[in-house]
Image (tube, rainbow, N blue to C red; front, top):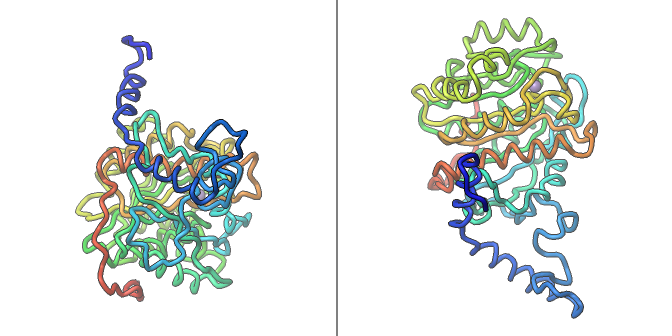
Amino acid sequence: MTDGPHNPHAQAAFRKEAQLPTTKAKAAEQHALKMGLPGADSIGDPTIGTFSRGPLPLYAGISTMLKLPYLEDVRKASDYDVGFLGVPFDIGTTFRPGTRFGPQGMRRASTQYTSFYSFEMGVDLFESLDMCDLGDVFTIGNIEKSFDQISRAVAQVYTSGTFPMIMGGDHSIGYPCVRGIAPYVGGRVGIIHIDRHLDTLEKDMDERMHTCPWFHATNIPNAPPTNLVQLGIGGWQTSRAWVKGAREKGTNVFTMDDIEDLGIAKAAEVALELAWKDADAVYLSFDIDSVEAGHVPGTGWPQPGGFTPREVLKLLRLIAAEGLCGMECVEVAPCYDVGDVTSVMAVHACMEVLGSLVDHGKLPARRAPIANADLNAWKGT
Ligand SMILES: [Mn+2]
């Protein structure tokens, strides 16, 4: 590593890497060899087994999220700091469907991320966190009943003291996801919503579609619209009815121009101030279509003019620095994707948030599980 005055970030990254443990990775490697038998005599590398049982090769094996353990018994979620939860649901879609395959797309793309390490942040998620893939919510062919299933599933994860990392699904799930957390927070819940679309209709096509989550989430008694911050809104797909909804509710809206004028760092600071005002927790809703359409073709409503990947990743890092009660990544529709770039972007966003939570001491910070939690506490909200 060359020292010099012009690469302080890289030098800091090298220093942080030198401090990271390898304990869990080594143990996992031993376990993989034990399960998959040592490799053939001709193989020189002693870490290579006959059967692939660890993260390598990236293209092999069973695609759980990040090749993490699949937690079949959801009652044991409390053993983990982070639980990835798929919500394969797209009947709230008003244009192109396909986000029911979002969780599977993200799982497939996630194998590229199984080094778990961010050079710039100097974080190794595998060493720092116990994570699992909780599989998927059993969504069905009815929006409201599926919402009930989603709220119940999210409540199960959250009351286990586990960080819910939710993989959508269309954006209608924002409402039942927040609803599944809010009753257990104690105080007020703020929401940071990154999107090109306001999604503040009461109903669309006579149902609570993916254009509607924030109208309903902000009717939850402890999730008021004044603590909802909507970042990146704009373009030619925003209906005037959405604007009416946001105006009447009094949500906090920032267009791409607002954010560009403020700069990403200041925009994050302002968003955090608003979302955290008198709040005990903040939930993050990341719509992949907030990113410039050219980078994320695999989504239902691609739109030009959004964030560049680099901008949005920085924004996500800064928002996560203050801690979160959960995150959803929605609107990934792999059937329109090109070379999995949209799924990769979605996985990268989740990794960036987890990395920042670890880097800022917000994870691992397992909340004590709520004993005998009422998983229906959200009913009526
Ligand atoms: Mn959107």
